[in-house]
Image (cartoon, rainbow, N blue to C red; front, top):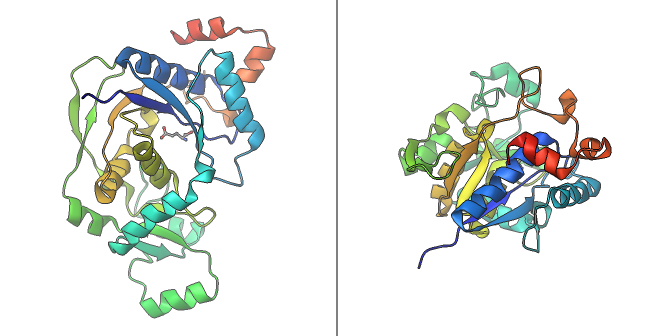
Length: 282
Ligand code: GLU
């Protein structure tokens, strides 16, 4: 029996959606239709300080306005913390997580380069803290985050690959090697929220039976970590497809912080869903 394709669009409700999100959503729904499957909407609101209910509502309104529909109930990651804790505990039991007490300043000071997102590459400062030191610092209530011990993880997995399909979803799939070393010891449980983007996305993609992950090219490098976590947690690895990014006049990715108009702005300025779809090529 063949598995029916399940795709997802998973925005973080910490701002209004702009054309880049519309492109990604339309791409995902189109790919789902081409594959004869369905597209889910998932709200990635693990960042409790930045996520706002009004932005979640705006996601629903904007996507409905674009003519998109999805099965209910919509999963919200803020309701899934126990599942992420369980996954983190599994990695901890395998000896793959360690506590890190470093501040942003310390991390930047000792950085050994930058990761694919341009963030300072962690030097591993806390990797070899003694058990007594850790206990004392936890006792004092020092803010703590938990990192993946990448070298140990790689010693268990060896080189890993993933399956990539081109954005038309029709080409012959390719096998790609991952390069998790370029991320260093990533944070899997943050100081401000007991999970991280990488951990929750991997847990939920598996729990929702996602067969194809469609996202922008800017997130291609994160697949290194996602595939590694899938292997370590014994989860299936979906097929990946990366779409082009919409760039602003400055040649940079659209973003609300750089003044890209939101879908709401465009709607209020009289643009119709048909205009948006046509402009974006759907
Ligand atoms: N929530 C992520 C974002 O809005 C995207 C999730 C994903 O495709 O993995 O950037």
